[in-house]
Amino acid sequence: MTTAGTRKEQRHELTRRQILDAAWQLAEERGVAGLSLREVARTVGMQAPSLYTYFESKDGLFDAMFTEGYRQLGLARESWSEAIDGLDPVNALAQVIAEWIRFCQESVARYQIMFTKAIPGWEPSADAYSTSTRDYARMLDALGPLGIADKDDIDLYTAVAAGLAAQQLANDLEGDRWIRLAPVAAQMLYDNIKRRKE
Amino acid sequence: MTTAGTRKEQRHELTRRQILDAAWQLAEERGVAGLSLREVARTVGMQAPSLYTYFESKDGLFDAMFTEGYRQLGLARESWSEAIDGLDPVNALAQVIAEWIRFCQESVARYQIMFTKAIPGWEPSADAYSTSTRDYARMLDALGPLGIADKDDIDLYTAVAAGLAAQQLANDLEGDRWIRLAPVAAQMLYDNIKRRKE
DNA sequence: GTCTATAGACGGATAGAC
DNA sequence: GTCTATCCGTCTATAGAC
Image 1 (cartoon, rainbow over the protein chains, first blue to last red):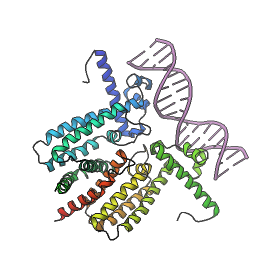
Image 2 (cartoon, rainbow over the protein chains, first blue to last red):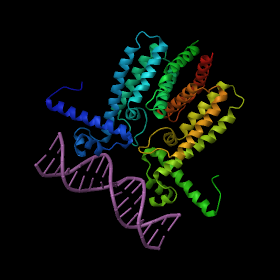
Image 3 (cartoon, helix red, strand yellow):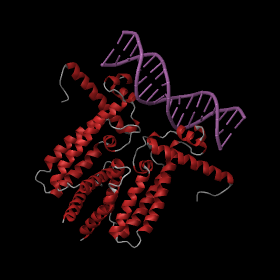
Image 4 (cartoon, each protein chain N blue to C red):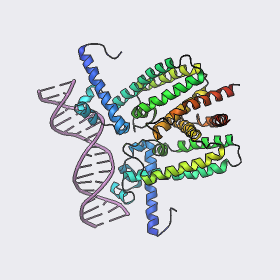
């Protein structure tokens, strides 16, 4: 999917990759809203105008980062899905919640660009946005077998998961204060949904 | 507390008030990270350098906004506290959660500056920060009588409340999709805490 | 207290040579 | 594909006249 074609195209992809890596690194250090193209260029040893060979604009770079974040989340979901195979719903849910928080914790920049509106004046393009709705559908597929399928249950689940991640990142960035609560949160959600079904 | 002293001081406070109002309005429109002093000045009919009579710097303006947000939250907590008087714990909790989400919904700019790290390079000063820790203490006072007192229970509560608000603001800014879930969330938290106590 | 003028940056983006 | 030069705009903040 990513690497194919002539050596020239491969070279192009490689440079694009280096630019994206630099952008992620700088966004991590200074916050996504503080990212500057000049600085990205300097980090990869280029002049700023050269970046326009690889990205049509700064917004285009943000779109690429946004899309890449969802690609990574897709891969993560696949591995979570394998890891919970055979577990009972509550333990499976606890695993998925804990891994979800860790995914957010791995990169604050990625978290900001994917899930918050931290960049003034930027919204994902229609193309980029569609990757996020596809991820939502995949999340629903994973939640269904765990007993979370009704709209309100899903909304409650996303709120709990989002809240645990938000608190972890805001108040204990390097620790596990809210990750540790994943099993409790899973049990809580499971019991509540079951109770309302009866 | 705010208005006292000579007419000169009152006039000073009034202008300061107008500047803050303009700052809130513009932060709402463009996002807190996109706030510019020139624009604030223009909105109140001043030149940018004149603002420095009222705020020592842009960061000082952010500090004032941050502090004001917590002052407003303090007032809100007082009224919530009156509103739940006599209610059973679950209904009281549902009320407080719903009102909390509405408080966040009232002003995205306030939400961003108080609860997210949306402004690159800015953190609240020590003075401003202390108002947030005082609010945390007041929140604990309100939660105790509702049966939420243990550290993990508090962390779970803050996660649920933060998550509901985050989802409401990110995905249904003007609606009530997650506010409607406040009673369910309250029941869920209450049952879970009770269950673990037994 | 408010202004003008300006310092001293930094920003995204484009033109055009090589 | 990369560069230099540059456009044109942005910004916070200060100096100093009034």
